[in-house]
Image (cartoon, rainbow, N blue to C red):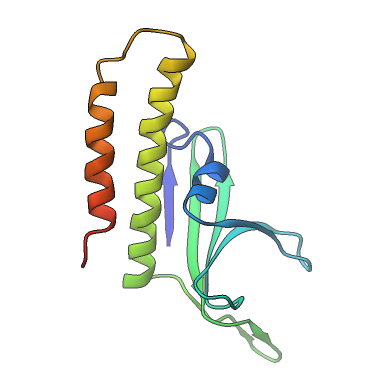
Length: 138
């Protein structure tokens, strides 16, 4: 599943992914950089995100690796690229991105040493609603 964001929505993809529990991963064979979220203590299953950044957009490409790829005569990758599990994880990432945007907006007013921003009084309430959504049982 692929999702695209504007740079104003997602100022620091690495920090956001780390807050969401993802770890940086560099493939030893290909050298490709990506981010992983292990679902158990084992290496698989895991969520796997590739990030592409341009001046106009930041794209997340998310899939679920069920097991190690088995290469031989046919290239078989045991990944899921869509479905309810992927949609739920992408929704969770969207929540982290939204929270990061809200917090970075609050931090930018603090960095300017300005008085309380009118929107900052709503920040706590918005974050509470966001957390309730995340932990709401489906």
